[in-house]
Length: 200
Image (cartoon, rainbow, N blue to C red; front, top):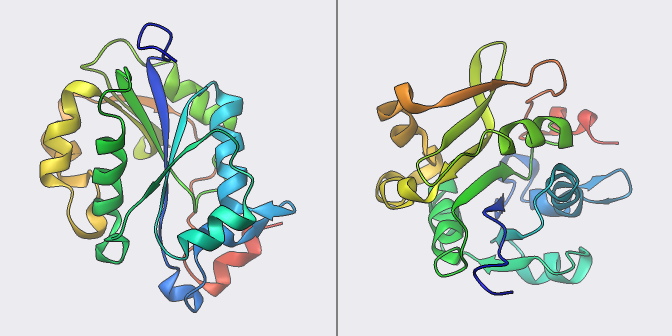
């Protein structure tokens, strides 16, 4: 695919976590609707309109590759995944260099309550490389988030630990376009054993 044919917005799925509070079970391999959670999350991005998807893997990456059908996704391995989500965000943004992407739509593997409708709303907020768009739930900013390419270097410079892009977004709050998604999605995380009740 040449740069001229490349989609302007690439889906970027962060799926590297080791599930520390889940007894060390990687979140990507949890089962949801009969398939690994990472596979489900990729399908959501595709159904929302992301024709190109990069997936950042970390914990048990080889097992994820073996067990999940990820088709033509670009798989990015983050050897520093244990240092937090910030490293995965940086690895994912780095993987977009030279692809022709003008924005990244970032979603998290452990939020299966956020489906294609919400993702499509955020995707529709893309205007240009300066775009900064976030889903909101009852007015509170959440995921997914769309980062125009003009923001990538700044995000990478501030993405540390498990905070991801939080510091960057706080510093640029006035520029964020909030898209209400509370009517079509539930932004819970799968973090603990109790949260597994959300999986089907």
